[in-house]
Amino acid sequence: MPARRPPTGLSLLLSCEHGGNDVPAALRPCFKGHEDVLRTHRGLDIGALDLFRKLAPLAAFSTFATRSRLCIELNRSEHHPRLFSAWSKSLPQASKEELLAFYHRYRNTLVQQIEKQIAAGSEVVHVAVHSFTPLLDGVRRTMDIGLLYDPGRPKEKAFCAAWGKAIKRRAPQLSVRMNQPYRGTSDGFPTALRKAFPTHYAGIELEVNQRFAAGGRMEKAISLTLRESLTEVLQMPTAER
Image (cartoon, rainbow, N blue to C red; front, side):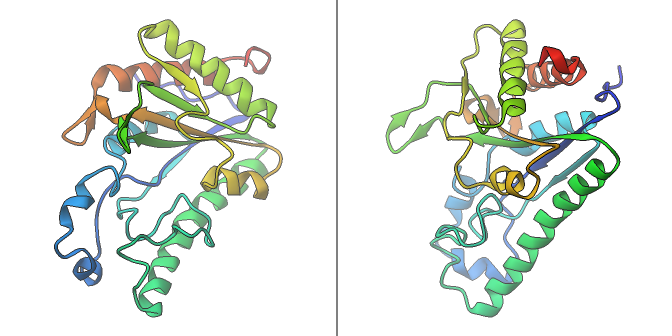
């Protein structure tokens, strides 16, 4: 059965900033002896790209990156201290400029699409698809799904509340938390986009526990639950979310 897209006037845009662990050939010497880190949660969001692809048919536009976040962090502002990783921060300036050009191309692609959708009279809902490690610094994270938003933006808050309820109706065993394991207002791509688009834009970050991912793929049941619940919320009248 084909996916049902949102009604006219609402546009879903999807992004996946940490979809892979690719490293350009010129940068591979930076990781010599440390190649294993590229396959961990530090190198990519495990399972996120697979989930993104399952959700993409719902979107008016979608974009993703497979370059490792350890080259350059697409989900950080340009002046963030961790824009470059421990392996890339000592690169020559020319190499950094090339990475910054890639960074700006990626981000500008989504900015242009938001502008296009708003100019056409649509309200934009942007969902950035991520995953998180179940164990960080020795602390076990027991939550399954996180929905991140800015509490000061009512439309984002209402959308996430409706989405959380739709998820729980389908899978009551899942632990769904708001603004966990990170704050929705922390430095990130949606945070920057909110400043650029103070109206007609809602930025949501979807975080899924990597315990549901194996071999780079997200469990089918989780992907289906998220796709069906997102479809339901997008089809709701505005007054219901």
